[in-house]
Image (cartoon, rainbow, N blue to C red; front, side):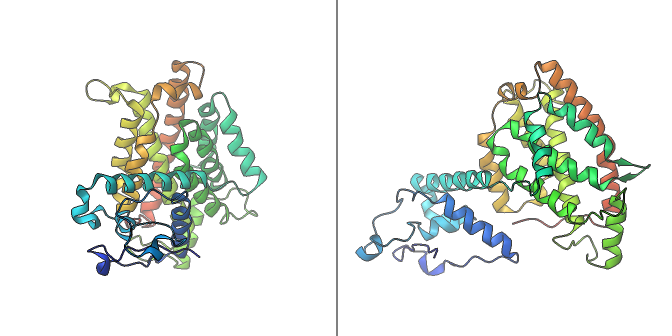
Length: 336
């Protein structure tokens, strides 16, 4: 049983809601799992000792209800925003939630997927291997080979793992998209087409007008895979092409590159909770100087390999974007 230890003496106690509401049962389940991990071991108390001795001696998790709600919105803190201990407690809990999510990365479901990601993790020049997979996605003049796109969704998380543990939640999303797409590949069709997949979903009427997508669906997986790819491409271009910056490149190059890419490509589709998680997660981003050595023996090799990958992505991404817009599948709704 999972219970939250409330603080009745808190002035805002009667105004707080203690139920988690979400239209997605999986979302709620994951939130509880992450919250449980994030709160173990129990954080030191940030408020005065409860007046009721029985409450202090109970075996429930010692979370101030206001602190818990403040994870969703700091506005719930009210006057306690001036209390540094409360603010530090929230920051610490978000850090643990992000770490818990990183430790619970969705693993490849099959030996084939595990081998694909493992290859990208141990390769001395992983982007050199990623580029042919991107090129294999190109089908005919304007289509995408679905099986190769699935392989790319599996391969890229292994490549990004070299950037550090902060990549955990993003890699999990990549595996989720790959799994969703793979479940919709018709093994009987040698050249499974992304256009054919999207067309079949539109013809079946599973999506609503104005880009309101059914979830789960192939379209949702493609849309978020596309957003992830374009964000990483934007970030890496700024890491290896210093001329993309106006003036001198920032000192913390990779962090600044990620923040620019996130602000440009993804942030508009994230709600307050995801934005807060990403904001705290950026504090874990290592320096580019400490990372690029994982991608090649010299900086010139890394810049060359990533440059080749970016050129290939510049052919692939417009095709995906064009099909998403052609079938009116550009869902602009925000996450939680």
